[in-house]
Image (cartoon, rainbow, N blue to C red; front, side, top):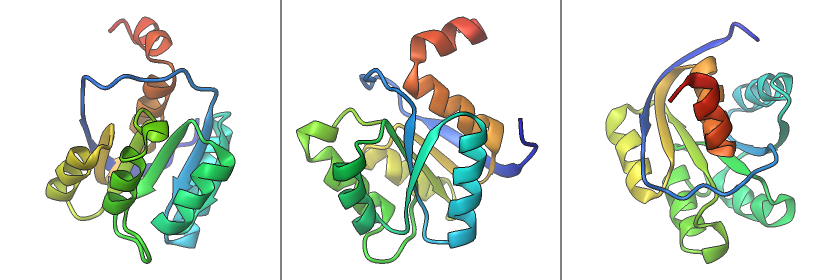
Length: 150
């Protein structure tokens, strides 16, 4: 596993139904280098990854790519992550699509993301292993619980 440290602290929202997933992740991040690095690291974890540079593009990508999970930054041009989450959650087709957020703006914004409908919110910097663990839990919660003894 890559020893890359994003250094985030996570907040989880409990009580949401989780659909069965196959492993396609949409990474939404406006910084090209961060987006590509995160995509490559997730591919090393055997996820299929598609990317988008902002929330507006992500909404179109969700329609065409039908990802199993979205990992998104919050602060982005065109449509920020909070508005993107609200738009997705307002569509019955995506109300159970797992969404994990990342923000450099602290726990207040992370909590706002959860209120908007995110399943997990991480304040940067984050630990890559913690992000992967959250993704795996959201994709296959039963398998994740058995593996960790939860």
